[in-house]
Structures are given as C-alpha cells and as structure tokens.
Length: 447
Ligand SMILES: Cc1ncc(COP(=O)(O)O)c(C=O)c1O
Image 1 (cartoon, rainbow, N blue to C red):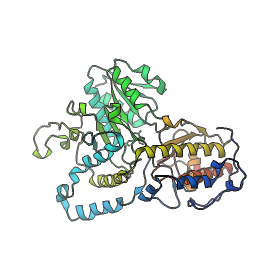
Image 2 (cartoon, rainbow, N blue to C red; image 1 turned 180 degrees about the vertical axis):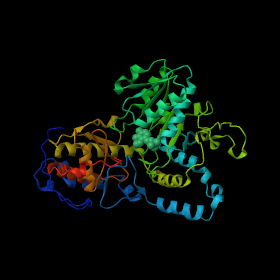
Image 3 (cartoon, rainbow, N blue to C red; image 1 turned 90 degrees about the horizontal axis):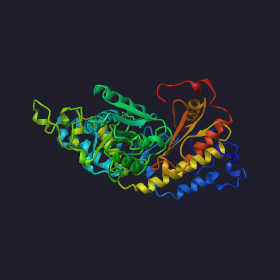
Image 4 (tube, rainbow, N blue to C red; image 1 turned 90 degrees about the vertical axis):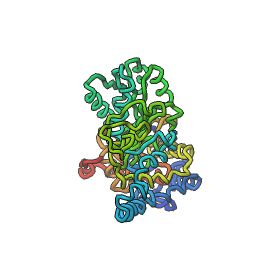
C-alpha cells in the first residue's frame, strides 16, 4: 500500500447512491487532493464519451457491479429477443425456425460480430461449445500440426481449466507430450525451444489482470517453430485485440464475461486462415462434417471454420449472445481502452489513499499498458469475508482462492462515480471491521 493519508470513511451504509447524490464526508474533510472528492468522479462521468452506453444495460439501481469480468449484466433487448425465440420461433415456427429464423446461421453470425472485437476476419471465428471444450479442440489441432514436438508450454498460474484440458489432451494422445509450466511469465521466452509444439497462454491473467505482450510472445514462439493458442476470456470486450496483426494461430474466449452473453453463454474459437483445412479437430460431430445433411456414413471434415462445430448448437443461449453482441456495433475500442485504464487507475488510487493499513496488497500491474480491465488485491486472511461484506453492501466483486479480491472494470456501464462509491463502501467496511463476522467468512459453493 502506498502511504498517502487516509480519508476517514464515514459515508452512509445505504445502497449505491446515484451520481448526483453526495455521500460520505470526503467532500468536507478538507483534503487538498481533488481526486478524492466524489465531485471529481461526477465530473469525469460528465466528460466520458462512453457514458451513454450504460443505458444499453439493465443494471439494478442498488448495485455497483464490478464483476462483469465474471458474468456480464443483461443488455437491454436481450430478454425480449430470447422471449421471441421461445414463443414465436420455437413455439410457432417449430423445426422450421432452423432455416426460417436463421438458427443454423447463429454460430457463424455471432462469430462475425466477435471477430471485429478481436482483430479477426468473420470467417475465422465460430461461436460454439464452452471455452474448455474449444481449448480441447485447438490444443489437439495444434499438436497435430507439430507431430514431432513434445511440449505444451504454459504458466503455472494459467486459469485451471486451460491446464487441465492440456493434461487431458496429453493423456488422450497416449502420454507422448509434456505440459511444461513456468512460474514467472518473464521466463517464457527462455523456455521456448525446438521441443515446444504449442505455447498456450491466457492473454490477461484472471488472477492479477497482468497482460502478456501478444505480438512479442507469438513471434518468439514462431521463431522456434511453435504455434500459439491465446485464451481471450479476459480480453475480448475488455480491450482491443489484434489476433491477425499478431499472427496468432488459435484463440478461444468466453461469451458470458465482457461479451455479456448470459450465464453459460457459448464461447468462441478463432483459427488463423493458414491453418483452416490443415488438420482435424478431434470432436468430429456431424455439424463439423462438410455436408451434415447428406447423412453420409463416414466423417469428412468441413475445411472452413465450421469444422469447429461439433453437435447441435444451444439455440436459446446463442440467441441471447448474438443479441447481446449488438451493444458493440458502434463502440470505439480505443475509447473503451482508455476509459478502462482510467477506471482501473482511479480505483487503485482511491483504495491506496483510503484503505491504507488494512493489509490489502495490490497484485495488479500499476502500468496500464500491461494490464487488462481488472484490479486485484490480496489479503492474507480476510479476502473472502471482505468481498462478502461488500456484496452485502451492494458492491459486487469476487474472490479467487486463496486470497484474491478481484474487481472488474467494464467501461460500457461502469461510471467513475461507481468506483468512488465502491471504495467508499470498502473503506467503511475495513475501518469498522464489518467484514470479520462468521456469516461473511462462511464460504458459498461459487465464489
Ligand atoms: C481464462 C479463463 N479461461 C477459461 C474459463 C472458463 O471456461 P469455461 O467457460 O469452459 O468454464 C475462464 C472462466 O472464468 C477463464 O477465466
């Protein structure tokens, strides 16, 4: 923690105050740091070019939502679109809706909308299955493209599903490969050699929010002949990504986080143009066949991105994601990035100014250039209880074991005043030690 003087935390315990309300005593505490005043946050919102985007979402009035990096909120119009898919397209159209309502085109259509956000061409992105399942497909495909190499290189602290899936693929391939982890990202380049078939990384760490240099690492991997898989779970919709410009080989990412597709939304998979048609992904379901409705007795792979489908798509979930993606139609990704950096900087500054002395340690890079759109602190013993107490006070972040308090900053709907109010609540909870009760320490199944 830095050592700037703490502002006494004495604001109301009421749910999230609206942007015009003045809560807390910071405005009258005589501070000379204007950034600590709520009025400063209000003024920044007034000057925010993305401020209008908040009205595209349905966010409860009494909630400050800092968990869009885990589950995005409901965009306006999605519930109605899903209701129409249920009552009209399914209820009345029945099986005819696969053609007449365009259900069959949803995986590629949603993929095309995501392509713009991740620097890809429409024909290289498909929405299908979960991120974990798509990882299985691309890890298998990448190993098949480098048959003489034995190593999948990753980070020890990669998101668990990525490493578990890699271990599963290795077993499936007869234990002929090894998963090599580095503890420190700085060691990745040195670990790249002629044995490495695949470098598999999450672009923005789910733990710390630290962001890899996609271009440099992809080049370093290519220089030794390895392929690269990027997990964009915490990048797509959070910041501009340029897969094609970085020459990435494969990518996957979640539909339910920054893309706001709803709980369990299907994920996306990207395959670089030069790899399409060059291998078989292993989940050879009928929708991955070059002509599924020929009902041929044997599998023949589609040679385009449709080979990454497997079975019948979850139409209602796809309808929700496809409709949710419309919020991005006119969003300038550079403006998104600069607001994301500003929100994170502001949060760090306020927490360090107002919550000093309570054992919180920043584990997110201070340098916005190497950070995604989240901020994480650790606390030795109280992280889970602090997040629980915050949630009880209307500020939703999340906890990641063993000790991380995680806050996502989603520029389309998060206001500067939300950041101010969230830190105000946190300061009170810490100052009054309100988090340290058995009820807040009791772990729920999903954290
Ligand atoms: C980096 C990363 N990859 C993958 C996943 C999850 O994948 P799935 O949707 O298959 O559960 C997450 C979930 O939080 C994640 O953070």
